[in-house]
Amino acid sequence: MDEVISASKKYYSRFPNELWFICTAVGLGFVFDFSIGFYRFRLVDLVFVWSVLYFIKLSWQRHIEKKVQWLILLTICFIVVRLLIDYSISYRTDSLRVLLGMSFTFLTPIIYFVVRESRIDNKIVFRLLMIGCLISLLSQMGLLRWGEKELAGYVDLSRYINANKFQSPDLDYQERTITVWRAFSIGIAFAILFAKTKTIYKIISSIWLLLQIAGGGGSRGTFLYVLVAPIFILLLKRDNSMFGKKVFFSLLIGVLLATIYLWAPFGEKLAEKDNYSKTHIERATEISILFSEGWSGAERTGGFNARTQSYSEYIYRIFSSSEIFLWGVGESKGAAFAYVTNKQAHNMFLDIWGRSGIFGLFLFIIVNVFIISDLIKLLQASTISTKDKINVLAVAMALLYFYQPLMFQPVTSDRTFMIVFFLTAGLLKPLRRWVNGEFQQQQNLQIQFQK
Image (cartoon, rainbow, N blue to C red):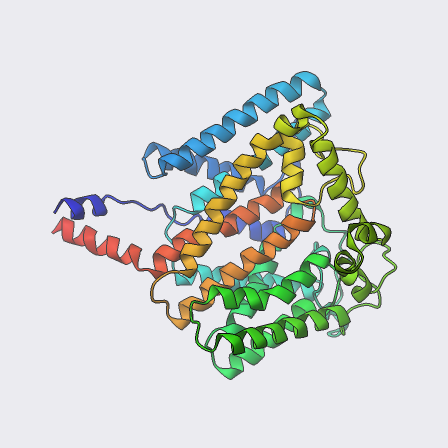
């Protein structure tokens, strides 16, 4: 009886749909940022603000784990100390604006821990995936103010359907919420392709996947993603029957998708980024220089050399001083080191280490340990139906899509991107609870207790 009473008191917050509504409005390009005094407030910042309020409420009601509460408290203390130190060194208004923005970015894991404790079901996940497909399609048709150009690989449909393409500027930082919808769109295509579904669904998902990658783009991260994604899905499955055959076909599919991405049959002649003068295949395959000529060879090659040089310079400067190693250079500058190639590290670990020191890096790694643990537990969930498995694989593939820009792009200093990354990661634990039937069990226990 005591177990029934204890289980009946277990609580899960409602799923915060308004957070995703904001991401939809921003991703569609409906809203700009606006000024509040010296600070530039973005609509997507409301996701962070509301998540903080949710977190306080759930903590007050004792529905957040103690270890999570201590982690967030430690992070807040660390940020407050950094704010005081950094502001005392550079107290100009423009520096304060960057300092506050970067500090809020460092606290965005609160969003993950809020969504992590909510109720979720198949309908909610499916709805999010369909919104992702719709926004991705609108982007390809040229109807959005901020398209997917910087996300690499999409097919520009406007020239094939004679649509008047919206003359959009480059994808700005505050509009990165389109990334989450692009990730969901690609994720469900992979999930349907590899799950046990009817042939017609596999054909449709293959066509949709081609629309996502056949435009090229030359992004090294996207190239690696389409190459390793089939192997990743194989490793997620616990069925070891005919393992060798599955490895062969996964490799074959990965190579085929990578070839299509490099070929870019529906893309422009050159990779779409600024005034880049290389083709999609020339730009994307620069990463192979590391394996053929080593680090120095990559540094001699245009484009990819910026990454390798940044990594080298960041590592050198981090280890050049015990103070930087431990505490970093602070958050008020945005980028840790202004006079390095590419200015930013283009790697989430080096970027955070340079700005926040080893202590800040340690806190960030702990959060990612939570995320990877949630992902493993989700994929090891008990009996999952085919319909549910599609959603599980789609969310897992969307999360994998996020990690490629986290490793290769300057997005850890981009608050909007980090917001949608942690929103997506937060789906893992409630999705696992749902497929395991924990929410239904809780409801049954509550009914039993009331009787």
